[in-house]
Image: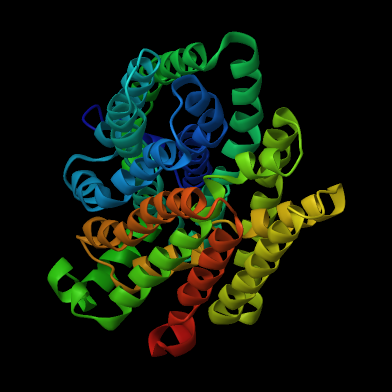
Length: 415
């Protein structure tokens, strides 16, 4: 072997790209589980923090809103940073920011301190290890199979909920919410060293076959952010992300509190919602499989229909708090959380391919961040104003319908 051959190039033998691709997928999955799980854990911390300081629901939910708002608004910057600096810099900054943010939150005394640490900093940290960088990295390895790979990554939301929500409740009960936050921060910081030791030159290179195909297509059409924003499909995808996120996060921010108010014990409520993580994985893979069988548009519309059924079951739970309705809600609503994400991501990366795909996809993802922040914040305001969950559920249903409209009327999404 030539002494001057770069080390990473010698690692990619003809039989190895598939194995490396699976390693990259596993890495992205673990980072997504950590990011989404830590972000969603705030739904369990909501009540103890509110009770500790005597804040109303809208004030506390504003922290959760800022988490997803910050993640969405910074998505274009994350995509651009990924295009310029590569995955190790992006992922390392994400873990560092998450670790420091939770350490600070463990000692917070005022609402603005939570808004900056658990809100803005955690939101940016999640964005740095989340769907935008993961989708770009996986696109270099999976090519046409990207929807399936992204279904695995989006299912990390469910896995994170399944693992970290019940764990968060147990930690809060045993050591307190401040100590739980301190533990979260320590874990994130401890993961930095093993992350930096990974073979990043190999991971970032991509599959030779996929990269060659991408370079061929790049010669045919190389999008810029400006040209993409002049295309109606860009705004259709943006709106789908936005309205769907409004609907989902208006509810998810308060689900554990809702179940407790409906009469379920706190740990039982957190565990029940945590089990949505199992059905989320099934839903993600199921909808992606349907995409290959019946097509993208029918699969997406099916997912919206199941989400609507889940929201109706949640509405019935306040009058009939039984395990049958709870199970139906967790299965229907939980299985469809983010189920459209892999298909929308694959659509965006296929249409707007080119050297600036990270920036373009990141900008489309702003819709999701804006919707997440607006949805959860509006949900808290609606609850405080109406002293009822009914207007909140109507608000969510309206936005679900608005989210599916682009797939009914936009030509590029109907095909």
